[in-house]
Every structure is written in structure tokens, then in C-alpha cells.
Image (cartoon, rainbow, N blue to C red; front, side, top):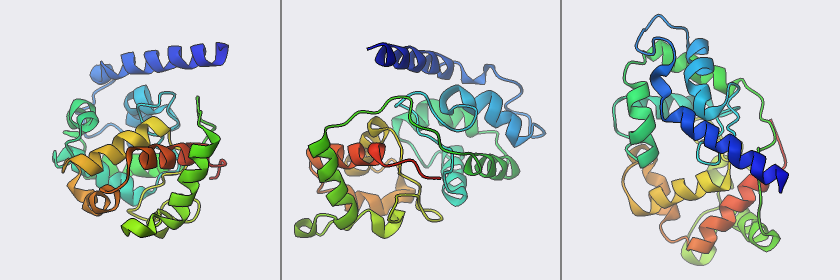
Length: 215
């Protein structure tokens, strides 16, 4: 109970920080080094080392550089318009230079993943998620997640690391892929996720959250 309470308190603090992200130093200054931006701005939601304390915000630690560059560029040009992107990332990314984007991607890609601040999951749901992750849903022509994201979910180039992300975040993103065109750079996921049931979505998310820690 104390762990749960502590987690909720940390999440509340993170959310409060994200409501005033641009209070940090000179976010519109192209001369500010990427490391300074990461530690003084991005850290409000994603943690200083890219390990988020809130399930609302993704872990960026050990994420693939090409994927991070692609997403930051999409936020900057407003082509990624899911609610979280619109609310938080459009404003923060609008002044980023190409060099700052590359620097941020390199910084977070080089961080080590730490255990999630809070994780839970039903064992049966996790088992179902594992089956979908490894084998897909053949009767619906849904491919295995491993075919793009790798056997351990660590990602590959522009295919992101999805292992050890909070289940809440995974559910939100799969729902975005299913119902909207707010992430056009990931159009392939709209096809993949379209026929997943709500239980399928939660199962995959629970499994990814429960994966053993891997760099």
C-alpha cells in the first residue's frame, strides 16, 4: 500500500511538472546543449535519465535513436497530433534545431533502463499478451510484434523499443493507432492494431510492462 501511495504521489508531482514545462532555461535558444534540455526540460516528464516515474509518459531510456529523431521531428512539424503530443510536445519541440534533436536522441538512447516505478498485471493476461507478442493473432492475420520490434521488444532502428514500458502508455498508443490517424508516420500500426480486441490490447500492454529488465 505504501509503495502504491508513493507511486501515486510521484506521478502527481510529474504531472504537475509537465503542466509548466517551459519554466526551464531558454528552451527556445538553439545554443542550449541537448544534454541541458534533457536534464532540465525533458526530465519533468521522462526523468533525468529517461526513466519516467509516471505511467502517463513513456520511458525514453535506451530507446532507439532513429525512432526518437523521427518522433521529435514529427512533433516539431505537428504531424504527430495525438493528445499527449499536441498538449505537451508541440510547444516544447517547436524551436528545437536538427542538432538538438539528434543530441536528445543520442542522450536518451545511451541511458540505462531501470525497474519501473510501478507495475502490475494479471498473470493470465500477461500469458495471453506473450502469445500475441510472439505469434500474433493468425486467425485475424495480425503479425507477431517480434517481427518488427525484435524478440525481446528492444526495437530496431525506426521500430521503437516497446519492452518495459508502462502498460497504461502502451494501451493509449495502441488505441491511438486503432481509432485515429494522429500518428501518420506509424501508419503500419493502424493496420496491425485495427482488429485487436480491448482485451488483446491490455494483454499485450501487460506483457510488455512485465518483461524482464534488459538493456
